[in-house]
Length: 344
Image (cartoon, rainbow, N blue to C red):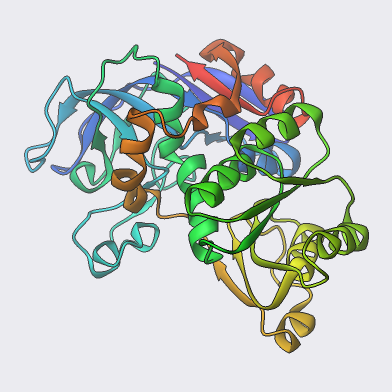
């Protein structure tokens, strides 16, 4: 079969690799019908050192179950399923606490722990605890939105939950990528009275407004912090969704929080230390978040997608075939596309 392999910064190739097969009795093999390129895939695309082995890429997918192991109980061959970006057994203490990204038998797709999803098919470990059967056909018009349940919609929701968004509160979203845009959906869905988005790309800002953003801040750094304070009677935001992961975005996010506010971090940190901890300390700004346990959120978010209350699939503004994936990386890296969907 064909799959996406990254050999180093800017070096993405589509290659023939062995077909996936059931190895463990808890495995399933899924034929991928939809995948996508994630903003977090752009970090290695920019910085990864060259290796001869390469890395199989992709961690978001919808597909058809083609084979199951002997111990798989909740899935059948032919089921259409959505695959969260982390695999989990669904039975450990952390899974029961809704933190599947810390599953004691889990791991992450496309990170060396499991196959990559930007491929024609992949093996899914811990299939019962990971995959969720979808009640639609594989060509349903809702497929783009359903695909976001594998990562970006759940991650935007996690940022909002971690930031304690709720009725009567002001939420500020740092980042206008797919996760930030889904964070706007989540903040609106959770009842925020005011949703401020920090961004400056015309297409993304237009979509943010349609998703429910009430204010747009195009400034950056200290100027952005000052502008948000102007919009919040000088106080700052109750809830801040940090959806980028860079030092500057984190400093900005912590500066946006009002005393007693909360920052929900879901941007993959690109630094080992968190900046601006002293101002956060003296303002009693709480910091929460991490890799989103999207498996925990699917049952909550799925009905809203099926019934048309939210449309996160609108973050996809380009659809490509598997052979075009290298150009899809380039397009996202150069901000020509918000998020690219792949149809193998």
